[in-house]
Each structure stands twice: as structure tokens, then as C-alpha cells.
Image 1 (tube, rainbow over the protein chains, first blue to last red):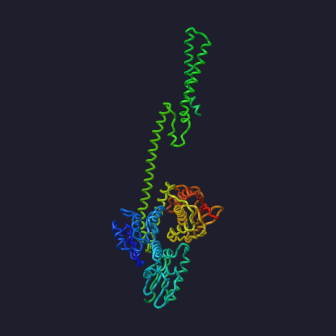
Image 2: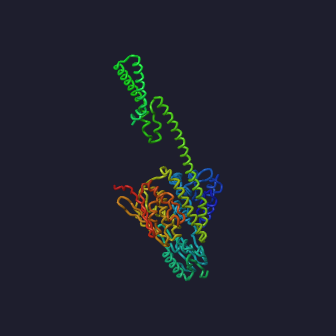
Image 3: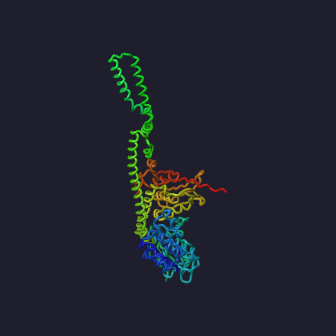
Length: 231
Length: 333
């Protein structure tokens, strides 16, 4: 499991980041004592460091240089400053990338995994595969597979994203907004009609596994996944 | 001009001179020296002396008079020397002290403005942390309440951004860097930033920008001004499921980027003033969140970056904003 050290003086942000990273299979270590960052770095020996720029006493650039004296692990800056000079400063002081506040979890996770892949190779220390489980229905978002009892079907990336959102919120209405947010990427701007198409496809995949009427349409707000199958 | 002022300044000498000559001749005349030639000789001699005196005086004070008769074009003009006549040096000193006073006050104000800009900068960055905390805390939540909170935090974020960029506009010269920029990636970044806003308002972008388009601009400022145009387009798209088309085209030597919405449009009487600061017009009274700063900032930034901006609108049909960029020179080797 990769170890990630979080150097962020806002306790709440540090906690939220920790919780989220741990959900995605990383081991997170928030710094609590900003006078002893290097000691804690030595104790933890993290694989990656998330570093804020504004810190008590010394700034993030200083600590970045200190860490670089000991280690070449990836360092990602997280800062509210979005100026070009701040980013240049960060990179010149040895950072690998820069994330500006307010940030999205997806961006942080994507940058972390790309840095880890670059630094340690894609097969180094494989993490435990993520699975989402709902009453015996198993989703493997990294392999785009869905299985129930002995059967398995392949999913498209968008179908997997849709199912994941709904399985994580079992028996609750998932809003169209949230689903559209999941489906949008830089190239494809999915609208309501296309969302319907994807939902139809997901229903068909579930039917292939022998599950019917699990996805309910809630008029005017979204969709709902109800356990209509036997666990 | 200089000579005229000099002569006008010395005009009083002529009647004085005439009276003096008149009195002298009268005294001689009454004393019995009634020779017309001698009287004329006195007049001639005195006139010569006067002329000599005036010439000398003009020579001495010409710099002073030239200076006094030409207006100052800049504050530094006050520091030019006026010559060494006593009057000139006295004025010199006066101007210098006035110059010093002005400079002092200007510096004080400049410092105050700079301090203020710094304060705003610090403050906005400080506010981003609590905003991030709210944002992260509710990011995964899907209750209608959280959608509403998210909407408001997005508004706060956009507001802070506008404050930040408005305060930076004053020190623009130190804060921009023009280089060849990839237009597609900027458009994408702006859409990504406004993704939630678009989905919430059920507005969908249609992007048609050739990935090879590169323009001369500053990435950060261009991103901000494009963001202003796109958020306007979203805000004023009143029909659900309407499109915003973002299209790139070559126009002669320039690249044209067009942002077109199918929203409420701008009434024709407001069109002329949309780029004026704090102008919100008819739509501002109907829609909330109109500050009247968006398009003003767009125009200001475009002027500084050397882009041209045009706006066309029709009520009920929509608004089109066009930006013209110059392309970087391509290397033909």
C-alpha cells in the first residue's frame, strides 16, 4: 500500500483528504507537529507527499527543499495561490506537480496515481483492487466488470461510473446532476437524453445477470437502485 | 510667445519713461535752456539706454519667461532650472518644494493602493481555505440541500475570483506573460471549471475548436476572461437544455473564438454600454448575481492583451461574443 504524507495546516482539509485517500486504498499520514516535519518524514518514509505552501514558520518551498535533500519521492503542492510564479517557484524547489485550491478529489487522486505510476512503475506494489459491493452484486471499477453469483458481464467506462454512483447510494435517489457530473469529461458533454441511453444500457447489463427492475426512474430528480435480487 | 509676455510685463515702463523724459525736458526748458535739439538728444539718448536695459533684462530672464509661458506637460518639468536671476532662482525653489510635496503625496497614495491590493490578495487566498473545506465536505453528498450549498459556494468562488482579478488589474504590467497558448486546452479548462454550473442550469456546451489553434495570450488572464464570458452565457440561458457553442475559426490573419448562447439576449438600448463598469442594464434587474463587472473586465483585459472583443445580441434569440486573437509566427523552416 502506498504511503502518502499530508502537510497541510488546515486540520479540516487534512482530515478530509486523509479520509478520502484511505477510501481509495492509500495509507495517509497527516502532519500534526509542524516543527518536526523532517522527523516525521523520516519515521513514515512516505511514497508521496502532499504539501501546502502556506505553513507556520517555514513555507512549503523550504520543506520541499529539505525533503529533496533526503528523498526523490513525488511531491505535490496544494495551494490557494494560482499565480504562474507560485507554480514556477514550486517546481524550481523540487516539486513534481501543483494543485490549486479549491480542488476536486478526482483531480487530486488522478495526479497522485499518475505521479506514483511515473515514480514506481505501474506494477510496483499493486494496491488492493477496489470493489463496490451491494447485496451480492460486485462491481470492479478498475476492470470494468460486474458480477453476480457466478456470472460476470463487461461494462463500458461510463456504465461503470453510473453503477458505482448508484451502488454507493443504495435505496436512495441519485440525482441526474450527480450522474451527469460523473459522465462529463473534457470531450463529451452528456445531456439528459444521452444519460437515458446509458441508463438503458445499464439496465440491459443487469438483465443479462438476471436482475430486473432494479433501477427505478424518479421523475424530475433522478434514479434509484433498489435491491430486487437475492443477496 | 516668450517675447510677448516679456513686453507685456514691461509695458508699464513706457509711460514711466515718457513722464520722466517729459519732466526732465520741462525742467531744462523752464531753466532757460530752450534748445529743441538738446531736448531731442536727451530723448534719443534715454531711449537708447532703455533699449539697452531691456535687452540686457531679456537676455538675463529669457529662460524664466520661456518657462513661465509654456505649460507643464509632466510633473518632472518642475525640476528644470530657470536661470540664475534672483527672481528665477526664487521661483525655482518654490517649484521644487511644490514638486517634493506632490511626489510625497503620490508615493503615499501609491503605497496605500499597493497595500490595499496586497491585502485583498491575501484575504481572497485566505477565504479559499474555508471554501475548500466546505467544497470537500459536501463533494460526495447528493441531497438537494447539498446541491443548493454547492451552488452558493460556487457563487462565492466566482465572486472571489472576480475580486482577485479586479484588484490585480491595477498592477497588470507586472502580472502577465504573453506566450503561444493552446486554445483548445484553455477552452476545455474553462468548461471543466464551470461543469457543475452548466449541468445545474441544464446548459450544454458544443465545442468546435481545432486542436492545432495556437494564439498569443496570457493563459491565466485569458482563462479568466473566457470564464466570465462562459458564465454569462450560462446565466442568461433561460431555456433548459439549451446549447452554448464555442467555435474557433481562422479569420484572415487572426483566430476568431465565438461564444454563442441561445439565452435572453441584451436589449438594444443596453448594448452600447455593456462594457461599462457597474452597468447591469435591463437583465441585471431581472437576474441576480449581475455585478456589471464581468464584461467590463473582459474589455479591460482584452485591451491589455491586445485582443479584440465584439458583442452581438438580440432579445429572445441570444448573445454572441467574439474574440479575435493574433497567431504566433509559425516557424517555416
